[in-house]
Image (cartoon, rainbow, N blue to C red; front, top):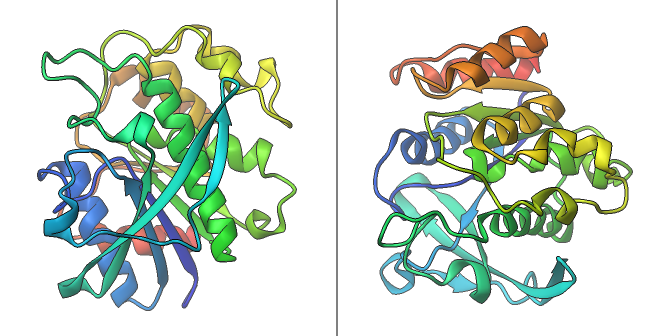
Length: 266
């Protein structure tokens, strides 16, 4: 699958956020895959704790300016970009004042889960896909990292199913040790009911906890990768019983080559 296009959508990427298993994979995997001859695009949210000046983010005017309607409210979509010079790699940032200007990522300074994390996930997933449409860049593989990206497989299969840009796209979802406590907003399921998505498609979000959000992503993905050595046992069991194409955890020394080969299998 030489020169194929890989779209990376990640909850966190270093150096823009502190180093973690997910942020490091999301930083070095795209670089490694690009060095092996693929074409890549990489997206993450522009959280308020991302230092724009130090990281030299700038707005891409031609991609910004769209409004996304969530729960009957318009939310402007702003696209910014930065470069990791050493990797010859650009990172696109999904920005919005309502959702991403607070100085924390998913919890407040008292470690309370943000009440609108459900809408932030909706805005991020749709924001990335709408931006890719504007770029007229058709990905062969869409690789999602972190539960905040869990809606991407649903949108690709249901909401954008007749968009020719995504007609050949396969979605790979990486499961990490990133479980959250409690649940997302109880109205999360209703907010997802767009054209092509009905209540039955998101039935398991009647209880919108981490396990069910993860199961939704797996249900609509084409393949799953175990990104952490230890993942939520119920999610792991669900993957294995689903029959979906599955790649077990890979060590740091080999994962780029193994993932790169896995894309060809998918």
